[in-house]
Image (cartoon, rainbow, N blue to C red; front, top):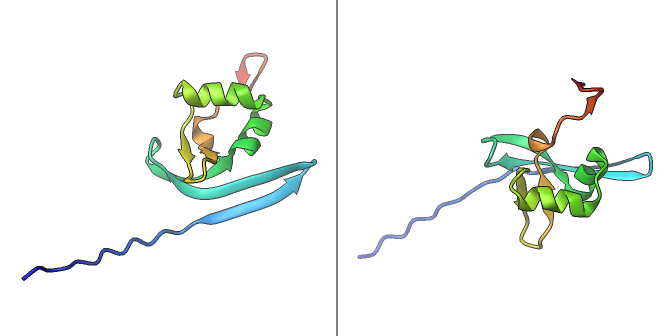
Length: 94
């Protein structure tokens, strides 16, 4: 006789959207496998605006493996803020 097992996986997701200085900021709490922790992943557009990069430059960083990211089933990229470079002013970390 065959036995059946039911495995239930529960996930929790929080999505925050707010507008500041004509920029729509999108953040969702999710697991970053590269960091091994839950972080507030940034939408691709939010990460680009935060870093002051053009989208193409941010795509290059993702493709080169320089950023932690998650890609959704519909092709959206969410970027882990822990992997974003820290901005510097005159060579000093902020």
